[in-house]
Image (cartoon, rainbow, N blue to C red; front, top):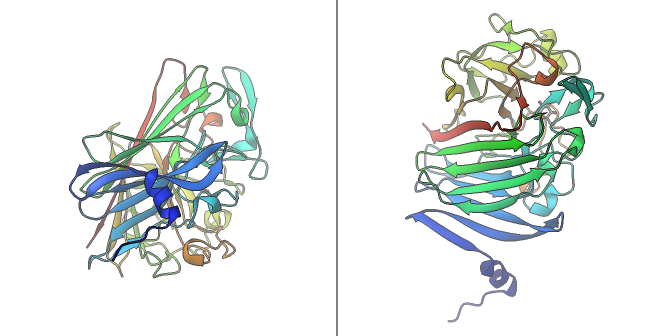
Length: 377
Ligand code: GAL
């Protein structure tokens, strides 16, 4: 009997290019039916030899699915998001899986000074600026391509952010790569150059739920953060400038603790964030990769470990999810359906002299690396 292929399937096969790096592992590139900025949004799939599969679309360099085996080998998708590229275009995604920039996290009163000049930015979070503004890096189409990398299948996303975009000075050339290794690592590398002094703080905004949909919230996940200080915030989630000890507070994750164990604690900081929505100061002994976070989902046995070159990590417990967004498979994402671990420089650094600098000057190269390792035990 002959197999009949539908016209749509043939069309989609025609635009698929495959690069096999080793048996079972590889990268593919496929055109989706969605278009924006006059470009077709493309879907990239990375697969490793042990069956882990990561998919990302060129809109926002967004990770749309991340399939990982549990302790019995059952594959499950550990990130929140939508089923189609079109759905991401609606503009109501709370940064599901996206790369956020030019400045991830908040800048107070939507303004900063650099070399004596004030730069007003879009106020898109009350009076503050959040995640790059009204049309941040998450909402634009990047140029994606499969690139050769000895470590594993790799997709590179590039874009040029024009001088003045969302109020930021300088033309910024940006490149983000995702490399999937056979050890279950997703290596995320960022590079940027500017032709004028500017500020840069790029991060990955995946929402994880390691139960892969089996649990409606992430409160049972056990989290460890390699940090003995955090940056307390005001009621609008802007750091006060203090680096406070976590000791004796619900922010102490130096020993693995369930996310839900203290989430209803009356600590005033927990009221501001409606739960966890803070930046932790990573314990760092080298400028290279250090351990930032370890997570275990006890039912499935899935684990996630995060290493980074960044000084901080925002642990956001999905507090603003309210069940109104229907995600993959029509599933309503209620409060705390997922959590984010955003490796980064501290929020509002451009206005905080004592925080590590986020200034990038012409001739310098911004480089940042984060490695997410998945596993099961
Ligand atoms: C997080 C941020 C939260 C919220 C969320 C998007 O990165 O810390 O406060 O803005 O993004 O809904």
